[in-house]
Image (cartoon, rainbow, N blue to C red; front, side, top):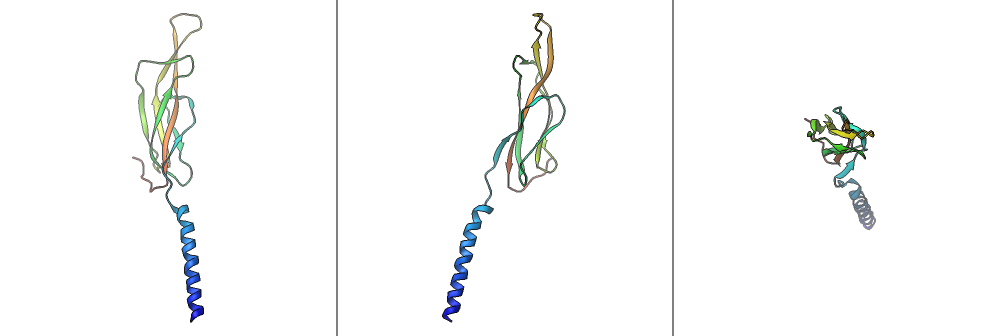
Length: 133
């Protein structure tokens, strides 16, 4: 039986190496922050959506508004129409309206309004998904 014990020991050693080598690959990655692309004029009240990388789900999300060069935000607060995960928890949906003002080159007090720029932010995770509301 010495050959059998040696074979069992070798098999157990190989199985231990295989388990140890596989452990890091299956371990959950920490949540990652993802900033979507800058959507010029995206704060227009229409729905915009950004997705997590494949096989990941949304843990949380939100948005940031910015005014283009040469413009400033209006004093009216932003209208947030939607700010939530999508129904499959794979992306984040934002619909927000915020106006910026730009003075005319003629030097008059007339101003032209336009939507602010929008950037959607996500925190994506490998953890179990939770469906959107």
